[in-house]
Image (cartoon, rainbow, N blue to C red; front, side):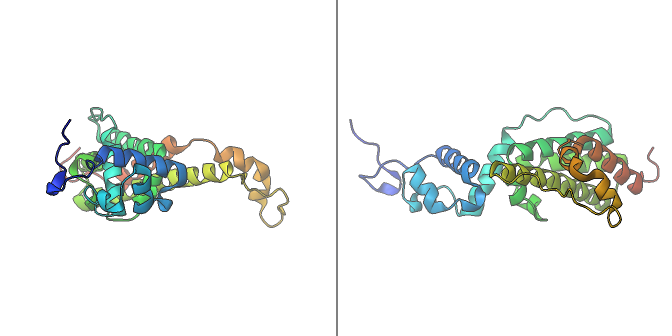
Length: 227
C-alpha cells in the first residue's frame, strides 16, 4: 500500500499527529501533575513526536492552554438564559463556577484581568450573559463591567481556595486549625475553635452569589426611564 505524501512535500515521515490527540494528552498531563509542570517537550514525548511537530498545531504553551480552554468551554451545554436580568446573571455565574470546579487549573490560568481578550467568541457566552443581565437591569457599560469583575473575583477565589484545599488534603496535609486560642485575645475565634473545618466545608457559594448580585445591582440601580 502506498503511503500518503507527508505535508510540505516531505516523504518518508509519518503523518502529523492530530490536534485532538495533542489536547487530550495535554489535559491528561495537567490532570495528573498540574498545568505548571506541563512543558512542550514533555507533551511531545507523551504524544510520541518531536517538539517541532507540535508547533504545526500550537505556537507555545500559552496558545496550548487557550486551545484547551476553548475545547473545555465548548463542551459545556448552554441552556436558554432566564429572562429576568438578575436570574440571568446568577445562572451565568453558576455556570462559570461549575466549569472551573470541573477543571480548577483554568481558574489559575484566567486569574488575571484581560483574560476576556484572549478567548474566542464561542467561549465568551458566560461573560456576555452577565453583561447582558446587568445591561437589562439598567446598568451602564461601566457598571456592567464592575458587576462582572466583582462576580469573577468572588468565583475564582471560591474555586481556587477549594481546589488547593483539596490538593493539600490529598497530599497528607489536613485542615489546619488551632485548639489552644486564648479567649481573652480572640474570643470569637476561640468560640469557633475546631468547628472551623466543618463550617468551611459547607457550600455557601449559591447563597453568597445571590447576595452579591443583589447588592451589586442595587448599588448600580436602574437607569432613568427603566423599571
